[in-house]
Length: 334
Image (cartoon, rainbow, N blue to C red; front, side, top):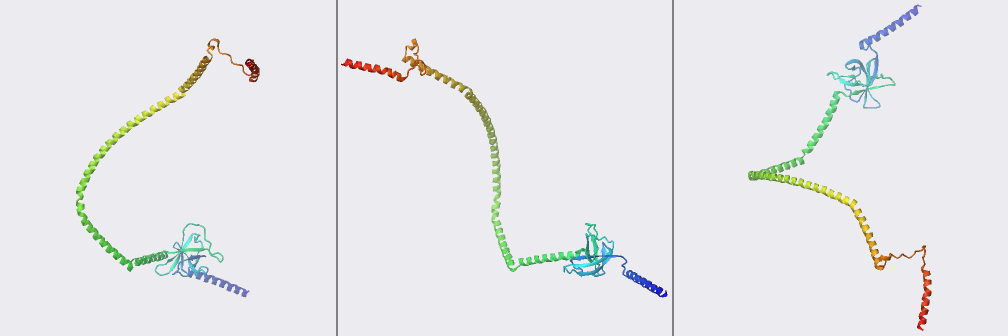
């Protein structure tokens, strides 16, 4: 029994000693909270950042850097593993910045959120390792802008050096000489033009007089134009009256052609028939004057009428008489 009691006391002492060691270690390290781990992905340099560097969320200490390594799949990326307090509001829109810490040359990790997403980012595990993107800091942007500015300055310097080459300097010298000669010629031309400029005064006065006379002529022309306009209006009125008279004459001609001409044509046709009848009557009187007393002789009956005889019957009746007359004539001769 005593051996069991001693063994139980030794085990209990060892357990309490271990707990005390852990509590003491946590007390001295200051890490008395539960941690969750995330991975930060950085394309920029991480100078001044070491393990155990502080991690802050909008200025509040929430954890420390646990590991810094280079990505094996992409050598341009640097992976920074951080351990932060459980419950830190790390979402899918959270980003990281590596900022310098004073003038010590050390750096720390600053976490911030854009607020675009409220979905929590799951912590990193062996099978799941979501990354937080590290944005370039202000110094990185300044360095990049300064490099671009230096590149632009170099291009400008190259262009200026090409512009100020020996050949271009000689060309500029010749251009300046040409400009000097041209300015001297212009001065001489100005001196030669001074008498002509002085004589412009009388010409200007003559031009004014000419303009005044031209104004008078224009006034007269405007009056003549107004008179011509009035006459043209009178002519237009006369033309309008003539158009109306022509329309009346046309209407009269239409009425004459539509009403009078048919009547005149009918009268002419009746006169023509009367004249023909009179001509036939005169011809009958000339041939048979007795018709005035005894009347006109009735005409011979036609085919199908009573008393009609054909020409063949008439010939047969006339032939015997002709033969008998011939015989009589021959007898008389004898």
